[in-house]
Structures are given as structure tokens and as C-alpha cells.
Image 1 (tube, rainbow, N blue to C red):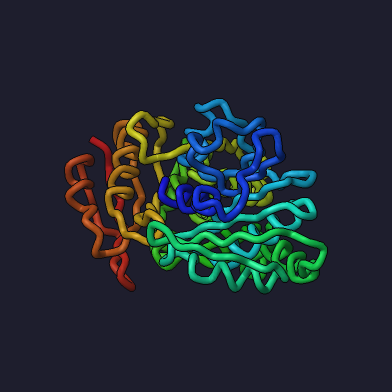
Image 2: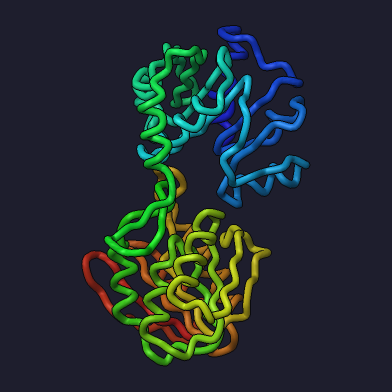
Length: 341
């Protein structure tokens, strides 16, 4: 969403603050849009999503998933719509900013932009706010009076943590990070004990469907965890390894909507596809991932899919698979098993 980075830069272009000099230390949390970074020397870019990180990497920038060390003159943040993750990123920003440095954060109005100014104020900053492109940018200088106790609390709540009163790990920012998705639970109830061979979990999240498949079948020989979020594949791998230490587990950080992606081939794929781009429903995302799943299966391989009942996936499934059977239809979700021709 280039308009978000354009909103982020608006205070510079309007002359409200002096632009960072290329030699200054710049940290960009949830970084995107390499064109706005070309004049900077070695900016530190943090991005977990493959679709956002890939253009940065291809432009020659180094991208990390880790919390950076040191202090920065300027910190840019694109917090996203999840409140807990937004608080975590703003806490990370203020902790990383040098005294006298500047923090800028931008978000669409319908995805957290309207609350940014209040979050800055809670952190003890004196924010200025501007609107552009149906989005909001908030910026402030960092002095010694910011609320360190609150920042530490927000930072801690955004870390990995155990969920569901178990040893399972997850973290804010992952989809459904602290619960079991209703659709995934429906699909899990219909996973058969004859799953065998090489299995993949497309859009694995923290690994719920993989763990359920391994619980019902002892014949899975290899598991591949795939997600667009680098944090998800790492957490899912550790969750699976903690319960199945001898199982070969591969991970793949990629964008399954891309037409050139073809992992596998697999004997079976588990899939609860996303269908949102930000706050907007976009069923084409799920259709593209289903297409990737079809080309990633062996002949006679099976796709185990769950989706919201209203989504237009059945026509896509009929065109790509030789047989499509409904496994369950409950609570607004339908679960399918689809056999490749």
C-alpha cells in the first residue's frame, strides 16, 4: 500500500519536520516500499511478511525479523490494525529511539489510524497528527520523559507467549494468535487417520492444523510448514518439534498467491486460506492459494480445505480437482476434501 508510505512521508514533504539526512540511523518497523529508502545508507528494516520483504530484498536492502539493537535518530512505524501488535511496535519504536530522535507512525483510518495519536499520548509523547489518503500520520520527538513502564508493558505483551493453557507458543500479530479458529476446528474434526507420506500446512499460523493432523495419524513421514509470516513458520516449527521431535519438519517462508510458487509435491495439503487484504475482503487471495495447492500435490493427492461458506471457492475447486467432497458444514464454514486428477 504505497499510499501508507506516502502518508508516512507527508510531514517531511509539508515541511513540518526536517527530513532525516541519509547518514543518520533509520529504523523502519513493518518496512515496505523500497523506493522511499534509496537515499538512505544502510537503514535497518524489520519486516515479517514475505510479500512486503521480497521487494526490499530485491532492491538490495537487508531485512531482519529480529528486534534491532542500538539507538536510532529516526524510527518509522506502520503499526497495522491489531491493537496489541500496534502497542508492541510503538513500544519498540520509543525504546529504540535516541533521545531527541523522531518517531513517525502511519495507518489507514479504518485500520488503526484514528487511535495512533492517543497511543503516542499514553506513551508520554507530545504528538502531532496529519491526515492524507484516508490515513493518518502521527509524529513526535522523544525526550527523557516518555512512559518507560508502559512501554515495557506493551513490549512484553507483544512477545511470544504460551496460549490455550498449554505449552503451545504464539504471539500477537499472527492471525488468530491466541485461539483456535472455528473453521480450522471444523476441518480438524474431519481429518482422517489415513493421512500419510509428505504433508504440508499452507498458511500454518502457529501450527494448529499440523498438530491436529499428527494427533490423528501416525503415518505422516514429513511435514512442511508454509506461511507468508516468518514468525509463523518459526513458531509452528517449534510447536511441532516440541511434541514430535523425531519428525522431519521443513519450513517455507513465501507468498502462496504468487503463480511461480510450487512447493512439494505433497501427498496432502491442509489449508484454511486467508481472504483479507488489510480490512478488505478479497476472495481472490484464497482462490490463488487453492491454485497453488493444486499444482503442489502429487497425482491423487488430497487437499483438505475449510473456508467461510459464502466464499466463491467451489467453482475453483471443481475446475482444479477431479473430485470434491464436503466433509462438514457448520457455523458458517464448509470443509472439503479435494482429490487431484
